[in-house]
Image (cartoon, one colour):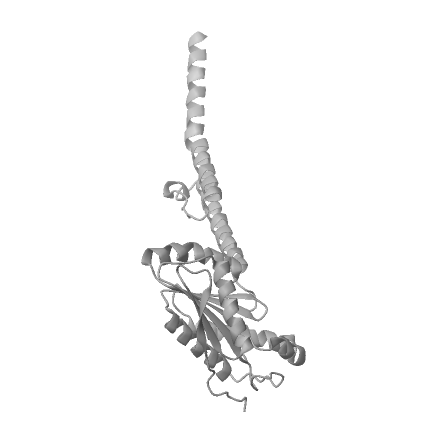
Length: 272
């Protein structure tokens, strides 16, 4: 009887060992994988091959689980893109700007390079919206976003819609002369679109005003300060008739910005 009991206990132990080895260990590894995906979802990791290649129920479970994880990754990536992009123009939004700054701030300091910011405002956009309708206003903003996207194409260029008819461009390793030239070229391209605006006292077509601010090499101040200085340059444009570019240079040891003369607009184009 005792020997039979010992054999029975040994058989039970062997059965439990097999269950643990063939079933519980794989399930624990799958659970660890799910936990890793939950805690470190930004670092994708495939289910171990020895689990996903199995032909039994555990292998089927592993493969199905991998499909669910991949679908969840794609869904989360799509949701993240939606939260970082302006739904109308497809440009980035303020949240995307903040995320890009996390990369650009250390990069600009490491390279000790200049940083320029542009505030872009559509001239007399409210009467455009009021008279042509909001659908036409949305189409106008989409066209302007297309010019911005075509003008600022470097991987480090940041182009965002701040809201309404205001856009912001952030450029690293771009000095004041180059930033000023790029801003005026972009302004001319938007005017050359020839979008009719008979309610604007500036031109018969849609135009923009651009305020540019540049910080010296290695100095990147708070983005809100950059926007404030660029806004001040933008007001210089508005005070001098709009449809132009005005720039300010932020001194490394100064608390105010040094103004730079506004760029005169090129010859106006009509809508034909």
